[in-house]
Image 1 (spheres, rainbow, N blue to C red):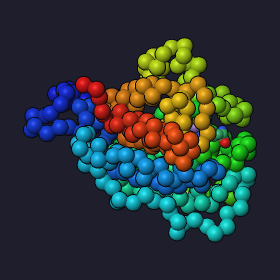
Image 2: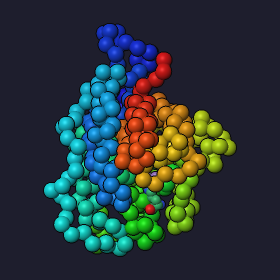
Image 3: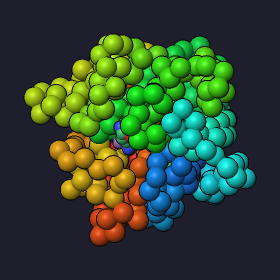
Image 4: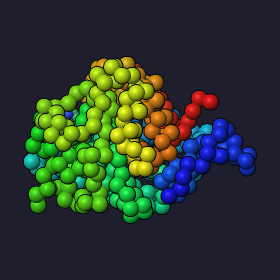
Length: 341
Ligand SMILES: NC(=[NH2+])NCCC[C@H](N)C(=O)O
Ligand SMILES: [Mn+2]
Ligand SMILES: [Mn+2]
């Protein structure tokens, strides 16, 4: 394992006169500047149309351009927003109360191997969603690649108003975007008829390496799951009490310095005044600055290996769409090492 190289921890141009992708040396990636980008235009984990248009909106607002030109990343991108239409079943009746189970399963399985292919090369993986069900694909893909490359388990920081840890049985809505964490941690029962039977042990993450930030709308069954498994969670109440600085110290302290981190950022973690265009907005959320700060702190660890940005829905609250997209771009930039100075 590479140690943090303090000589690179300087601001601006390196010795060769070229900008570094980041001044923070990443401990777990092959290079500091290779970035795999996957754009996922998928909305089947919930019922509102429009979240599939987010990757295009983010890219059109200049995200890829900024990653390449401002932040000096080598972006590996197939120039396609994947809708996975050929994988979608013609008929997809509910299963154990889940809506669109076959579609979500097929799409996340394919996405998992796309993310895996980037992560296996030692690249940072940025995935633009789509609804949060896609995290079944992204996190399983990075977890598997990190195990194979480094022989390590990966941690997940889940920034969200919601815990998304319903099992099909505890879910009231049947929307799979409220369940990805249950499948990824193996908490959703693993009977033979599980549509996510393709998820194998190497795809999973431990509940012990899972940390939530920003929670404020948790279903009854989810509260029980969080309590029973002693899952680390920082709610908006905790952020009000301690401040975001202390909360980040505690969250990162729980993970430790020797563990690769996958950050899954649901834009609805932000208060609707900053990010109104999202399918399940909840009042009382993070300020944009707090969201950026979370992303900056995770970047600073030098342990971040992947980022998801999900649940931007430009067709909702049309007046706020541009602002929500801008908030998403800002979070991504901060997680990738953009700093003010
Ligand atoms: N990724 C999200 N925005 N999830 C919202 C989930 C809302 C609710 N807990 C449900 O299970 O349906
Ligand atoms: Mn959410
Ligand atoms: Mn979510």
